[in-house]
Length: 95
Image 1: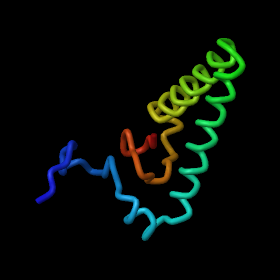
Image 2 (image 1 turned 120 degrees about the vertical axis):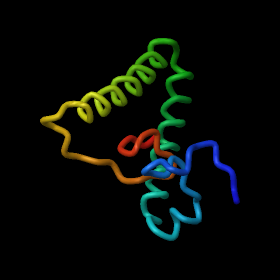
Image 3 (image 1 turned 90 degrees about the horizontal axis):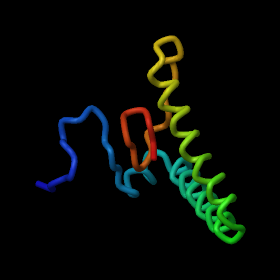
C-alpha cells in the first residue's frame, strides 16, 4: 500500500494525481496550469520593477486568500465551493 503524507481518512484528497485529473477534469488541469503560469509571469514582472511591485503582488495573493477564507467562514455566505483541484489546502480551498 502506498504511504501518503496525509491521513487517508480525510473526507477529501489533498493531492490528486495528474493522471486522475486528466481523466476526470481535463479542462480544469489546463486552467490550473494557466493560472500558475500567469502568477509566475506576474511575479517575475513585479521582481523586474522593484520592491513596490513585489509588495503589490504579495498583498494581492494574501488578500485574495484571506477573502476566500473569510467568506467560507461566514454562515450567511456559506453557499459556494471551489472545484476539486490538483492541490487542495482544505475541502473547499484550492492552492
